[in-house]
Every structure is written in structure tokens, then in C-alpha cells.
Image 1 (cartoon, rainbow, N blue to C red):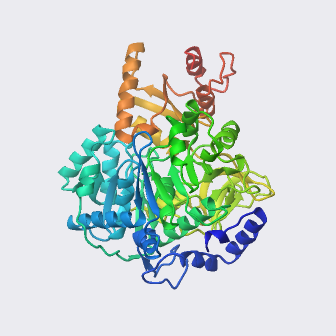
Image 2 (cartoon, rainbow, N blue to C red):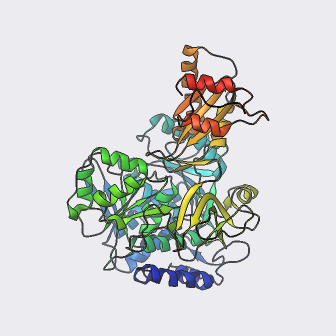
Image 3 (cartoon, rainbow, N blue to C red):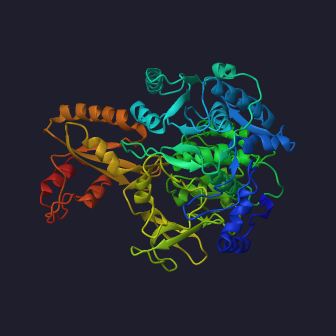
Length: 607
């Protein structure tokens, strides 16, 4: 299906969506046939959850070679943003040559098809090249985050069986990078220096043929930063992931274009994030679009956005609420020709005030502000609004991707009625869904599948009469912190592992303008005076960063003698949540607590 065949208005969407669900096998077969297969598949999906299982293909060949063969070698594949307004670019032909060079270097290191490659790089062209080079020789990418602690990244590399690490010693935080390089040396792991000059000289200029991979072979393993001390690696299958992300890229970002032409994508996420891999790497390159590598223009936004939009191609920027606040601090009105074609918002919930501002100042208009829903297991966005007049609803999660079947169910698994709240689940699976947790298949089913075998999101939603989904609340302990899914219980377990902590409770404060935030209540093993508390907080912060990384670090630590408990002995989390939101007064009725003086102490401290 070409992009011009995707829906352009709500009625057409409903017709196509109904057809894609009633004839799912035929629909997904048609989408998959849009890829280049080295050995065609004969089955679409089976009862084991496999998609296109007997087919073989190569991800890099689909992202680069086929476009060059079709005469698009001079089309821009990557625009790299440097300091100020400086930009450099790779055409598809130039990018293919660089990828072959790096692929040759990886082969010379002894890397083989199926081996894992750790990639820890900033958002630049080298990061995209590293992923493509790994895929070309059939290796499996393992994205690492600079915000993970060195110890957590080491556990990830051990879990994935990484054979080569590609990183840059000049990137921040240098302390973490240096520790990982030292660790790799101690484990006889080759380290590829991907800093500019060194990476340009890595490898040899020779032809490297793409290696055929089974459709169910892993393309990459994603380790989300949930705060867990034990890494969870979600495995994404090559054929299914590429099929779904290509559909998503075209349907979401080519919708409404008057002529078929490439779009330019800038994603405000770390290269280790799922949404980055989907929309600043595989999605754009599969669709023949352009990846913009570099930071979101949240400092000096006017000059940088003007430079980005000085092109005939539509420019699309995907950002979090945190980016919106930063941009607004330095923003001046843009001239109409330098407005962004579309602004997509992901990660945390966005206030209506911010959505209106984006539509009035940053995007073409309010219909070109779209919401993107995804998860660490969904592969890419499977629910969104679209940049079309009757398919954009301010504040809505949106409509499902063609061929994907979400439902709203109650606590008993029964479908909810129109506008009735329940949990959003997905029936029948979809090709881009993560296949398993590496080495923990039972854990994947336990965490993500309900008794009916449906993929459960733990998002409380409702569906209105027009079919749009609306977010209500989370149904578990997972919060969205700067776009990362963070489990409060796993953050608690890290704090409680410190020998001087008797117990800890972590509360998520939802709906802040910069996104959700974490607040910790900690009971030390031994009572401490004011000076000791300050020193202990610094010690806990350092301990936490070492074990999990800075991005899951609570913004506030409250020290208590013990947790407030009901008379039955349960921690009164709802009250702690109110305390974290400064919503408890000294006159509060605390008669249901067995230890109300703990709450009074917190209130008296002004917390």
C-alpha cells in the first residue's frame, strides 16, 4: 500500500480499518510484501505468535540498497545538526558506502550474524550508521543509554551476550563511558571508537553483501530503564518490526501530503529509546524519508527551527512535554513559512494549554499537533491522532493503526461500553510486538499477557462514540518520567537494598508540566539529626545513580521514622501521594492510621 492509499479522512479510515481487521492476514501480507525479501514468506502468522516465519530478509538492504537501486541514491537520507545552525548531510548512496565500510570493520573484528553489538552513542549520524552496519551483517543491536549507570549497562551487555561495544569516549557522562570501556577491556570485548575522525577511518572500503536473516530473528534488543536492578531485554523480530514501522511511518507522517515526497524527522528522544529507533532510524529510512540527527532546538529555537525548515520537504518534530517547556522559555513567533509541518507529542500527558500553544505557534495549525501512544513492547506507535482535520482530537490518545485491534475491558475481561473506563488491551497481536524478554519467556507472559492471551497495557482508557481512545489513568505502578516507563516498586527495591535503609516507598506525582515525577519516602535504619540527613540523602542519591542511573532518581527525598500505616498494617500510599502533592493539612483526620504522628511530622516540616 503506497502512502497515497492510506486514509485521508475519518470515513475512509473507518472503511480501511474495518477491512484491515476483518481480513488481517491479507492486510498484513500486503504490507509485508512492500519490503524486499531475499526469500519470500509463505505464511503470515501462526498460533505461536510468529509472523512471516519462513521468510528471510535484511533490514539494512530494505533501508538503503533498494532506494539506491530505484534511482533515489541522491535523495537526502541524514541531516546532521552541528553547533549553531551548521548542518551536514548524507545521501542514500553516501550512507550506503559508509555503512558498508563500517560493516567491513565489524566483520574484521570477528563479528558474525546473530552476535550482539552494544551501541552507546549520542544522536548523530554515527549512531544511525552503527545500527545499519550491524543489521547489514546480521548482527543484533543492543542500544545503551548514557543515563544508565555503568553497572546497569554492564549487566545489560552480560545479559545480551554483547561481542563488540561501539561508543565514543568524548561523549558525556565521561565517567560512565570510561567505566564501560574499562569493563569491556577486562572482558576482552573490542571497543569501536565512534568519535568523528576515528569512526571515519574505521573499516575498509569494500562491498559487503547484506546477510539474510529469518523474519523471526532478532533485529534489536531493547532494555528500557524501568528502574529494575535486573535488566529486561525485549526482543524485536526483524520481519514483523520492519513491516509495522514502515506502515506506521507512512500512515502517521505522510497523511495529508498533497504530493508524494519525503518528510524530514527530528525526534526528541535518546538513541536508546524505542521511539527513536522507530522514527529517527528504521521508519524514515524504510519509507525513503530523511532522519535529522541532533538535539531538539530547545535553546535558541527560532534560529535552529528556521534553519531546519529552510527546505521544500515537510519537517516533523516529535517531542515530550519537557521539550515544550524548554522551547517556550526562549521562543519568539515564527514566520508562517518556517512553521513545522507537524509536531508529535509522546511520553507524558500534555496539558491542553501546551497543545494549544504548539498549534498556534510551532506547527502549521492545531490539526497538525498529534499524539503518539506507544510502549516499551509495542515496537512503534500503534495509537495516534493524525494531522487531518477530522482525525485530530486535542487531548485524545487517538485511533489505532490499521490492522491493530485495541479494546477496553473491565476487571473481568469483558468489553466496556462507549465512554466506560477500563484497561486497554490488544487482541490478536501485531507483527511489531516484542516477542519475549531475553532469557525470561515466562516473565514476558506474566507481565504483559492477560489470561485471554491479550497484550495488556495497564493504561486506564475510555473509547468515545467516534472510536477515539482517551487516557484516564495508569492501573499499575508505572510512571512516565521524561518519556521513560519507570516502575515505582522497582525504584523502591533499589533504595531498600541500601544497608542503611529500613524501608522505602516511592510515589509517582502525575501530570506535572514537565511530565511525571518521583518522590521518595525513606525510613533510615537508624535515626539521624538534620546534618546527618543531608549527608545521607547525598549518599542515597549517589548509590541510586550507581545502580540505576540518574533519570529514575526521585526529585525529592522525605525522611521518616516509619511509613504511615493503616490499622491493618498497610502502607497508606494514597496519603503519601497527597503529601507529595502538598495536599494534607495539620487538621487532617488521621484516625484510620496506627501511627498518625508520622504524618504530622511531615506536615510540620512543610512537606
